[in-house]
Each structure stands twice: as structure tokens, then as C-alpha cells.
Length: 115
Image (cartoon, rainbow, N blue to C red):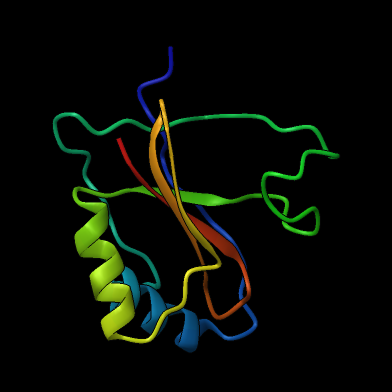
């Protein structure tokens, strides 16, 4: 029944700063309508996962966490270092892939994943 995710929507008290951050840091070009369309590529997956309220995987005060799949984690980390975006947590490597965490201007934890 489900074809895929149709979008991710949230509010921001600092819309222009958040738009600029996502453009600069993750190279997501956000249009005048305050959004963009990300078209999945071959091999891309979207995970829908539920967590208990008590789970410590991401901050309890944050109800939703964004996860972006990346092509090359080493290149992403180099880019983040060049523009001064610190990692919230160093890279974790598991059977599921490589993961890093950064925060956007609203202090929202964002996970980056290389499968």
C-alpha cells in the first residue's frame, strides 16, 4: 500500500537560519516555498522506525530525528570539518553501516548514515 515517504515537515523559530544551514551543511537547496524535493536514487532506502519514549538513542525532548543516507561518510566528515560543523558523536560503525550525528540551528539532532 505504501509507495514511500511523502515528506518531512516541522516548524522553526529561525526559518532563514535553518534553511541556510541545511543548504550549506547538507547541500540541500531549499526553494522559495521553504522546501525541496529529494528524489531517491538506486540503492537508497528510507527507514521507518519507532522508539520507546525511554530510548536514549536520540534526545528525549526531540520527538523526531532526521536521518539522511550519504554516499561517502569520509567525504561528508571532511566537508563538515571544512565548514566548522562539529560532530555531536564520533562515527559509529556497525552491521547497519556508518553513522554520525550533528545538530542543526534549532539544536535538532540529525543522523547521517552510510550503508
